[in-house]
Image 1: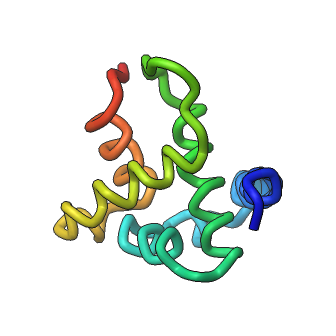
Image 2: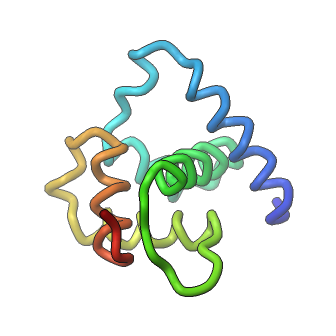
Length: 105
């Protein structure tokens, strides 16, 4: 899947998540990590959309452009090192991963 197609899919997944029922938004950090590392295009798009959505709702300082792929890699690396956090809600895990890399308020 090309970067442009991933971004399109991520945008669609993010928009779908914004209107999803509450049960669908209760994914854990472990659930999100599994989606991020899956070979599925849907899993990859869900991951990109989720982490990008969290990023855009945070106030962080970064040098240069932070792409969805960079955000996804950041989350995957953080989650791999912190399996004890896999029961946390996915949004909490993404925030922690982002804050471990960039200066955020």
